[in-house]
Length: 251
Image (tube, rainbow, N blue to C red; front, side, top):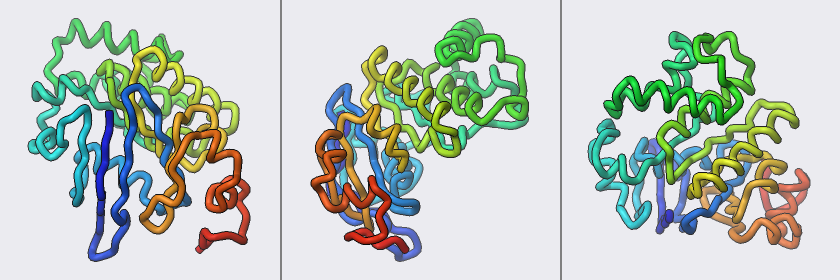
């Protein structure tokens, strides 16, 4: 379960997120939508303890201020119990490492023994369709394969919370759909609670249980996926149709 209350985030005196509330029930998948620069990724970074914020964020009843008091101790007992994974927009992969070492990176920081790491890495890569690519360099992979490596790295933790930062960005519709299928498979098989930040309408429609549309730092639509795509809400309709006229300023 994820609960956010009165979240406020500013950079250099500029308000990015202006007092939003969010709730994701256990096993749910919330999609954050909004145009570029609306603050979707900023919210995920706050949830992950990567940036400072005002307000309250609780994950499975634990205030993340307590969880992330040492942001770099991912081997803490609380971190291990919550098992939070973050899938970066551009993969967040290390060019100097091969696929195996990229996927194993977090496990090694958690001081998992090497024997277990090998089984976990190979299993995770098989799950995303990349078995046999362990020794390849990141530069040898297509964009879609790199996205899958990022997903495999997240799966290694057997997470119960996953934050997806626009994992279909830059992919063609077929590859985007395959990543959406993977997100659904992960959600259903691992029973994860997830938040996906994206402006990919096709992906959102396929995977979302609920949608929050962000504009000027506030939530202007919050509800289930069918309500959003019914287009009865003026903000939702403009965003879905990509219309110039409407309540959302295009600049």
